[in-house]
Image (cartoon, rainbow, N blue to C red; front, side, top):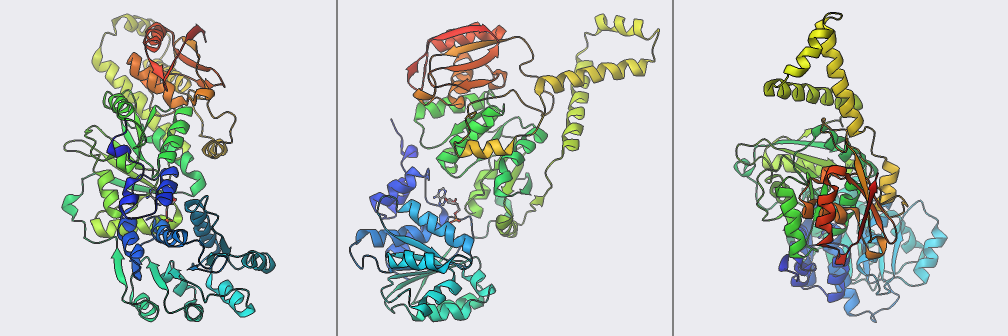
Length: 561
Ligand code: AMP
């Protein structure tokens, strides 16, 4: 019952790529080509030379890697074991990344991809080259070194890619590049990528490209009028710190309803699990889900039973939700127009909205680019500290008190206050009462940091505790799980591929309760344990008995937690 939205990276097939490559990107969770891929892939498949403007994060690696592999894989017997493609990159780190990406996309083809870069033992690389390599990914200095030693022969190269050419020029590789290109046949196809198409790039393109087609993702200036009026902020965090940062931000902002964007289906599922494991009510939405699942998730989000929707761009497109308070770019959008689309989901007329982007230091450039195009400021902020969170919680306690005062109905407790003021100062009495409320909230909502090492382990599936869902929410006081709890034992577990999100979705959706009311979840091989509020347990059990979880009927046993 898949709809076109659930299409398996069908957009890649329509660009003319071989089936095996379309399947490879679908397996990686890609849902559609990024803007640079949509433009560049057909040009490169046609055999033309290409001059592309694209920075890190736009998906440019796949933009050249997929057509390159398409050509090589169609005709694997040609020059088997000889260098057919050369990708020049500025750094060792990038050489490893690009080689890894080529491996992933060419999985199962037994194509040999060899990275060669400085700082690594020469003999190891020489042996790898001798064994035969159809694709070489290298830094200019080391490639030249191999050419001089005659351990590399480029006379059979069909495709040459100059990746991040502006950085290679900045690093003084201009001459090395010229020498290397001179070793390749005139008949080759050449693609050059740079973040900006400055005159010096035009010069190198003029020397090495033949009537290249130009591809750029910043085609049109995005008018300021198109931009929603929302506060736009960004946090610069390292790759490994993203989950901790997100936890802090969610705690600080306490969003009523947030959409968190990731790039791939796999990332959406992983992040949803991690968030649920930390006590946030998150639901996943991506194109790999059948319509019924998507409807259920949307219903939970619309009825505010799930605070957080974790989504891919494809799945979120066309959603008509008007109460989103926060859009969070957990992964950077792949182009400025994708950024504008995403943040357009918040700040709809008359509502306040906030757009938050997590970027790593290398991706800082993208933010500048978006600011220049949209003519709107993106503030770079420091992550909220523990002290900031504390202050936020105190403010929220004050707000709760204000609401209580407005509501009235205080006559009974007034008597207590009146008797206490015989012995104490009235301000002290009030302060003690406020402290008790605040402490009670803190206790019921729990405190503490998201443990990064566990998150990383969780993301790579190494954590044995990956299915725990601890009660934890130190955001603005919203007590959860403070009353008596029941422990439900459900007859489905890991063997049925059950994830915390499935249980939260089924319980919240079928019993029509808020996902934040659900406590700890632990998934075992053939059963799962879920804590639920005692007063709701009958309703939940009744609802679960009439439904299926991941296609399985469940039996349920309950006992006090
Ligand atoms: P790059 O700009 O090539 O460094 O790619 C940045 C990231 O985007 C990498 O993690 C890729 O795996 C990912 N990526 C590339 N193309 C797509 C796509 N079409 N859909 C989702 N993720 C993608």
